[in-house]
Image (cartoon, rainbow, N blue to C red; front, side):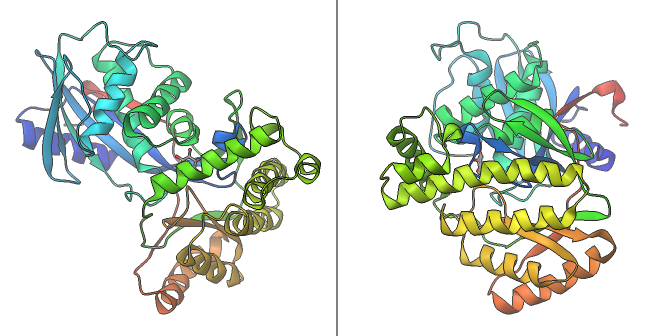
Length: 391
Ligand code: GLA
C-alpha cells in the first residue's frame, strides 16, 4: 500500500473540509496480462492489480447527502440519497450508480434510505481512460467507502458484481466483470486467473526475472463505449448462431461447421483462441517460461487486431517497436482497445533501458507523447480507519 499517497489524500481532505477524514478507501486499477474481450463471453482472463489506484477519504455527516470533491476535475458535486436520479453524464454518475447498486433491491428501487451521508475527497494516480480500468477502480473505491458508511457487509465478489451492475445499468457501458473483480480481489505479487463463468480465481505467478511494463500510447479511446457494446452484441449473435448460451462453450470445429457471417466468425475465433491462450499462459507462468508467455502475448495481439478488430495504429506501432527489443519477450494491447495502453514482458535487468529506448522510438514514429512505466502489483480494495492514518 502506498502510504505517502494515503497521507496526501488525508491531508487534502483536511484542507478541503476543515477536519480529518474518518476513513479512507483505496481500489486499484489493473493491467490485463492476457484474456481480452473474453470476460463477457464467460471465459478466462488474467489481470493484475496495480499500485496506481483511486483513493476516497470520507467523513460522515448527519444528513443523507453525499458531497464529493474530485482533485482530478477540481470540482465539488453531490447528490441526495433520498432521491438518486440520472443526469447528464459526468463523473458524479459513477458515485450515484455505485450508491444505487448497493442500496437497491432486484427491482432497482431503494427501500431503505440511510439517515446519514458523507463528505468525500476523491484522488487518483491512475491514468484516466487509458485502458487501466480507472472507472472500475473508482466504482470499487466508492463501493468500499459506501459499504463502510452504510454499515453493509463487504464481500469482494458480491461488491464486484454490484459495481458491474452500476456500470452496465447506470452508466450504460456493457462491460464484463474482470475490472471490478480484480479491483476487489487481487493478491499482491501475482496476477489472477479468473474464470468469468463461475468467478473462481487462482493466483498466477509472474515469471522470475521479468518486469511487466505498461506502454501508454498517449491516446485515449474515442467512442469506445459504443464500439465496445457492438463487439459484445456480435459475440452474442455468434453464440446464438452456434446455439450456445455463450462463446465459452464454442469450439473451432463448431465455428467451421456453421456458416457464420465472416465478421461473427472472426469474433468467435478470437474468443475461442484467446481462452485457450489464457490457459496456456497460466501453464507457462507455472513453468516460469517467459519466452512462451511472451509468444502468447504476441499471438493475442494479432488476434485482437485481425479477428476482433479492436486495436489501433498507435497500439500496433507500440507493440511492434516493443517486441523488436531483444529484452522483450512479447507485448500486446491491454484492456478494451481502440487506443490506451499496451503491456510488455521484459527482462528486469534491462527494463529501465527498454523503457527509455522505446519512448524515443515510439515518439519518432507517432505524433504523440507516450508514458512508459513498470507496473507494480498490489492487493485488492482496502479500507483504512482514522486511527490507522498517520495524521
Ligand atoms: C474493458 C471492460 C472489461 C473487458 C475489457 C476487454 O476493460 O471493462 O470488462 O471486457 O475491456 O477485455
